[in-house]
Image (tube, rainbow, N blue to C red; front, side):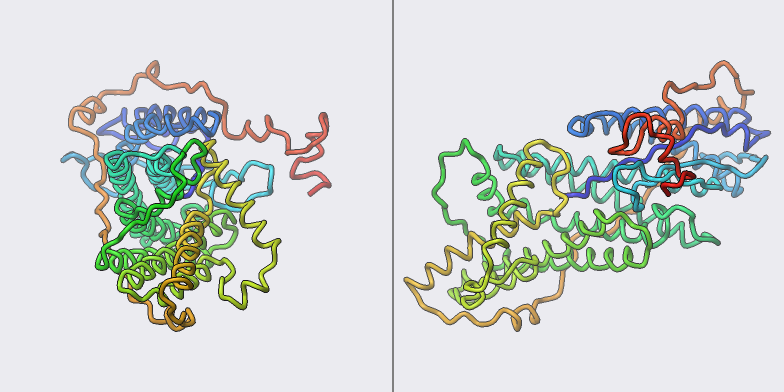
Length: 472
């Protein structure tokens, strides 16, 4: 369940005020036009209802793919590199200044995230590529939503959705990895936390963790049982046993452990970055817990299939501890408060409603769904162990300490820098035509703060909540 990234918006600028070219004089003007289109697309996407934003992602991808080649052409001109076999002579008239709205930084509840003033083309390039990576993650999220709603997909639909989501995750990972390597060459730390080196590294690890974790979804039959339980129209209420081959279960456990290791690295990087969105921090921790909980569950299936039901129960109890839920040991079960069980059930139902609406779902990284699977298997195996074959249930702590190492499934793809084609470069040798300049329909990013009063403010008192007033 990928993190629901918010796409950033930006202010309007004209590259003709900052750059000039003697070999391709139309390049700054064409880059301004492409950026204006992207800016308008991002503004409109922000105002679309959250449930309908997934269908608009393809338009944003198209606008980004049109604009990014111009950014790299400007970058090549400043660095003296060639673009599509041509040398671009670009002169910096004055330092580029642009504003992007932060989406990963912490903000006051009920208020828009802060706008960050950035300088240099490097910051513009990094923010734009980060937005492209966010869109890929959101596309993967849209694909995986078909697996978690009340309608059980066919095996073909399931395989198609997982394959598409995996491809999008790897695309996002390649972009974040490229930005991490590029940020290592910066002389100074970025002013925006969204494009700081620790955050970019954490996002690279996060996307790899998500891409690794969904590799087990295709052959994991247990989530389908949870979906059936969530489906109110389903008449198949009897639980049908599912079998996982022993070797595959052990392999799935190692893949989940590799995912948890990537999530742990991302969590460590984010902890070094101040003022990070708490929702992102909580999601990364939940993803790490979910991956380790899945690993314990697969090791439990491996033990149970080998006739070691007692060890399987111990693994499931360890899975509950890894997920952050109370253990179900016999002695602790008597001490468990009814309020904690009621709270967990309420959180599960709340997440179910989010999945049905398709808005803000998956912020728990699948932790509650995995908890349901563990509880279901634990109840079945404990009853079976108490009535059919009585085996001693060992403590779960030694088993957790003996967990195997993770196994990598994916390797980082190389990000291919998009370049302008030769025909576009030839056309930009002509002088710019002022009549072709793009003028967007959307207001500037600064106007959003003036248009939106703080949440809960009394009508007519918006001026009292200005940052310079006595309220702050």
